[in-house]
Image 1: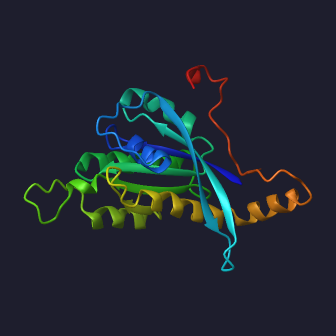
Image 2: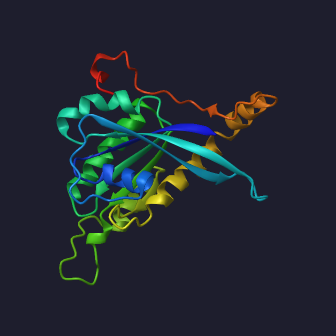
Length: 217
């Protein structure tokens, strides 16, 4: 098993927690309360190593951060040493894409993107029936996709409510991480030969419990 640290960032009420709970527990709560500080969850996926069908288990250790402005100063504590980041916006709110773009810039400036897989995620597509009079879409798919391509990001539009594309986000991230970390993973596997321990930790570091701002986690 290989572990990777993944963080979710984005404006308040874009549905970060709903995406995580759909992935981890396959559930959706219409009236989920806003995250305070951050929440921690984990889930595993399987990725194919080669054409012969051999699979590797990847465990995501997920930090779901609060989107409110008053918690922004805590974000570096959670995205530090992350292997992947979901930057989420609401497709019905143009301002949330602007905020997502600022998170992408912050990640690239402070973490770097050489080893960090970033996925831009537009949530709430269930509210965007193109043929309906009450279509609430405010951010065009091509607008967001074009930005993601320019920044070399993975890109998905999803619905945490229906589950559309949620699993695919994490599967794509896992496959990308497996690809970019292939040399480290191969070296780790070689170190495990002859050992009964099948758990390999790949650059996983959690927020420090010695940090006075993280007393509650």
